[in-house]
Amino acid sequence: MRILIADDEVVSRTILERTVKGWGHEVVSAADGTAAWAVLEGGDAPKLAVLDWVMPGLEGPEVCRRARALGRPVPTYTILLTSKNESRDVVAGFESGADDYVVKPFDRAELRSRIRVGERVVALQQGLAERVRELEETLARVRVLQGLIPVCAWCRRVRNDQNYWQSVEEYMAAITACKISHGICPACLDRECESHHDG
Image 1: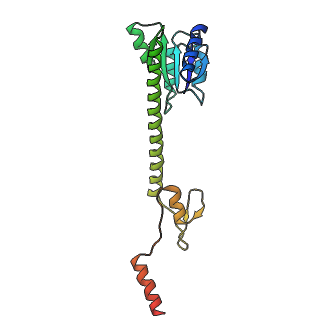
Image 2: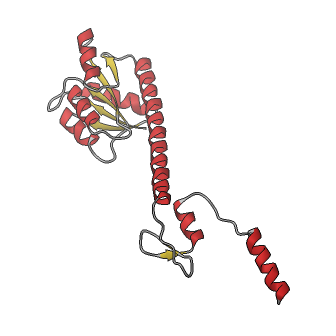
Image 3: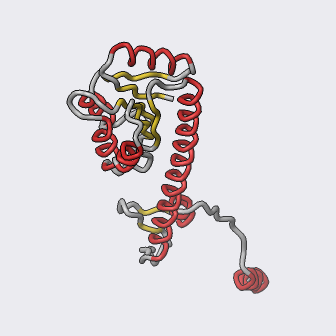
């Protein structure tokens, strides 16, 4: 997983980078809050971020607040890393939109566990977002089927949204998951048999 590490202290940032890379993650680094926000507002933002609280430009909680306000289907999972350990600080961190909170100096095992929790949450959110997308596509197909379908009175072809006339089979395959099989209904079978008998 790609993880953003944002810390203005070079030593702390380097230790974090090496630690997280050692766990097999790809790391994107930022030396201040402004640079961290630039990464997170991009189209290919990392799915998880470890942010120092006190940084030049934008502080960690403000970066969390802005990231949450983007309203993405799968928001970046944010972990605030800070020496602030008072109850009011923890509350303020979570109210800013942070998903988790780790106190400096961090315990490696604890940080790793919290990152794993973040990975599970991101995976669940991605799965839910995919299900929502599938449901929206299904609803769109249902709306098409509920609407007026133009059918040629002579050849029985159907006009699609691109003004292209196609067979009923092609049209149904394009907007639904159903497949059309061919057969002969009893009325047509009787009529066909009668015409051959009369002939």
